[in-house]
Length: 263
Image (cartoon, rainbow, N blue to C red):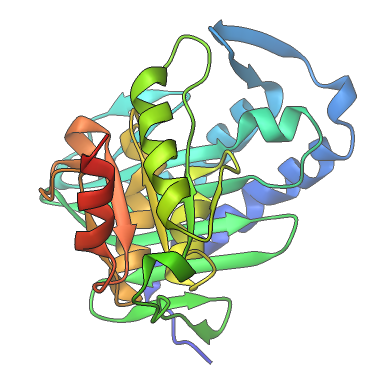
């Protein structure tokens, strides 16, 4: 059984408490009140309730830490070195359409470095956790990225631009070259779970652009602690700043970067 540190216990407890409301609301999704945030970008009462619970639980456990969440923005803490980076409901569109593929994502940043991460799928009850130097786990099972070396054998996750977001023409070029060289492409609409699936070896790689820090923070350390490699699409480490990411095992990273560079 995986031994969880005190900080991971805090994260797991907060996610489990917020997940209870998400599961309940998902069962009554047609009755949720929905307000429009922007083009094809909606927020539901479920997001806001989960956001409030996570802020309260994380704040009680570590009151001096700062926090950045999708729904509430950024709050500076007394401790300038530590910051939570939280998405209370990653995959809101899936949630609102009754698709059981969404997650809670919590990352912990220390002095600009992600040192712990959690992605929790409350419908499948899959808890993905990682801490720097301690490995990555799903529930109590140790995770490792896939060992595949050939792009022709690989299943790759991605995220597609939607109305008002992203560069559609560039994405179409990326899809064209990726479909030609790989075994398949999947677009499931929840970036945090795409990262987790790379960590678990379910996907061999994942790329996306136009992401926010809360989409990536937990996933970055999950993949790294599972033995994988994460960079921006140019091979640098500006993922949180620029919003582009490429995650895979060490064998596939350079070939995928080269392939996508053709677009």
